[in-house]
Image (cartoon, rainbow, N blue to C red; front, side, top):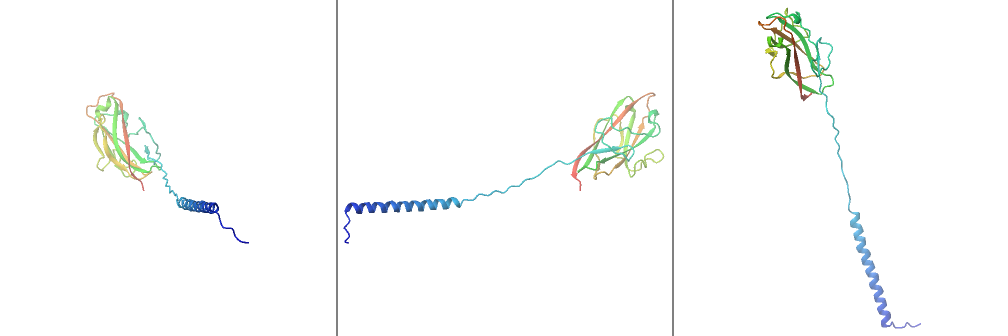
Length: 209
């Protein structure tokens, strides 16, 4: 069977189909390249989280060297003075031991400031000194007075300023033993009464080991 020659119209339709197919192939190639570029984009993240909490800081006092507790507000603990501090005479000297420590849960050392306030008319005729002793109550009496240099010497009970950096606490649950020495002045009047309140104010310092 002899093939019939193509007409001009048939040749044109064949050429148009070829161009459409080539265009689709080219478009597919372009789309393929685009898809490959999209798949090549990767995303990743890295996170870090810190957990924080505050430490603890607490001062405790004791009037017997054994039982320690916090007294954050005046008047605090009642000191026990020897030689009848409630019946002072001119030039009399009385002694009272005290101890201060950081609580067992404290995380920081402390720098201690000291202030005092007086109430009543007797304060004008009183002075005090403060000593540190090796053992509670030892070397804190008229028979065996303190021999170490005073942390505070001959301070008026009516003094209003604050003494800074009097001593430091550098270990938890380790008491610093103290001795108050209070002296009545030579002009002490009969029947005078009053109180003196001391505040040991601790400021947190370095982290305890």
